[in-house]
Length: 110
Length: 122
Image 1 (tube, helix red, strand yellow):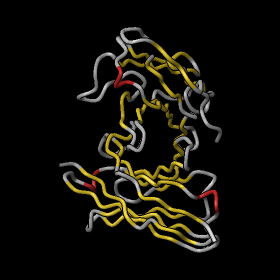
Image 2: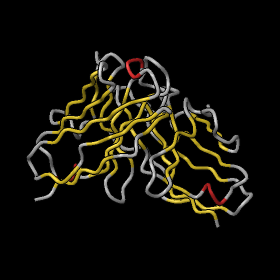
Image 3: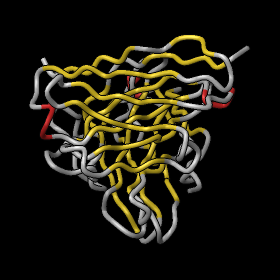
Image 4: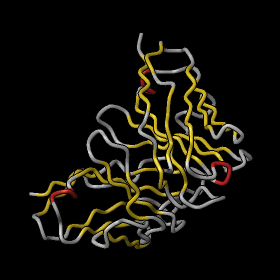
């Protein structure tokens, strides 16, 4: 199972919006709506930010939103804040009863 | 509070075995699927394995299939990962993580442990 494809890095200024893409195949992202997004700060465990493509767990800011089109999922962060600077990973359930992560995207808040 | 705590990491020689544990508290452990996810130094997340809430089904990444075994003891609120024939490329921080919806393994991982480090080196 190949990793999902994410850009290695994205950046934005405070207050701006950024979008991180996550491209898979018809065997993972395109097969189900079981796409999740995670935020990871250095030295910390990942934190679930989005589940089932576009759903925010309780306590996650509404500045975070998710979407999907065919084999590509996206995470949008609006109103960028300094504390959003972190690594972001997408993940998808697959037709092989496995999970696959993306390679990760480093978000820099300028 | 809802918590997962991993243990059992350390330095192990190539070809040897190691067993990791993940102790759960603050929720009904027997109702949730649980995953193992690892992260090699400076690298991204890699899904390793998952076990259904009742232990009836288990699935593995190709990279560990046949070498690693996931299991659970619901009477002890504990998850395990038996790792055999360890390789240098298994060196990573190993996290256990709960699937967020009772009785499934599909929705995403909402509770994570702090991780335990396994280093495979001679």
